[in-house]
Image (cartoon, rainbow, N blue to C red; front, side):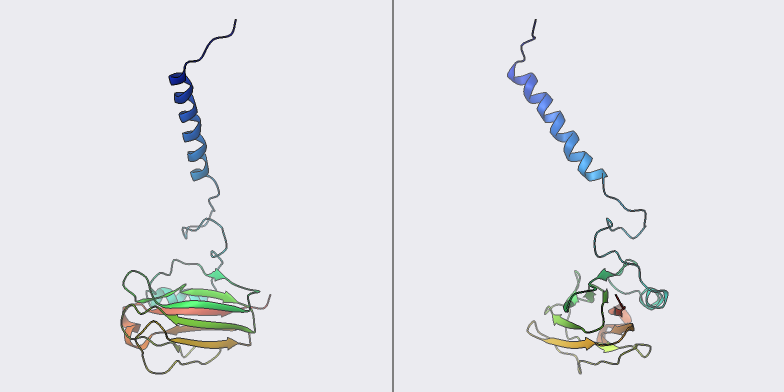
Length: 168
């Protein structure tokens, strides 16, 4: 004899199943690293020299990993990222030799510039700090190496970043 299920019982069971499926999605896909990412692109290892530079300078938005853009011909970095406009977003990017990096001003956080640190493998400088959202600065990185950089007016408040050029 088959038991008849009323609408209320059916909906309660369906809701419990949907909740279980939804929660199962939240608990999967974690990684064993402690940088908070979920193992997707963007959680690449950072060379110790770059990690030290970004950590010692309390780089805004830096959480111990880099966005992996190797193989991309061009990459963009926001200048004036973060909630206060005082960050490069992403703060660390890994690219292949020959990649053009374009820094794009968001218009947030005041006047900014992009200047390579003394230890950079490639020297670059966008010039004096500028304010606005229609400003860009581009540099093509031809050779492998670490390229830490900063914003001169906001260097002391953690506006630092790095372009890591690696052979594929």
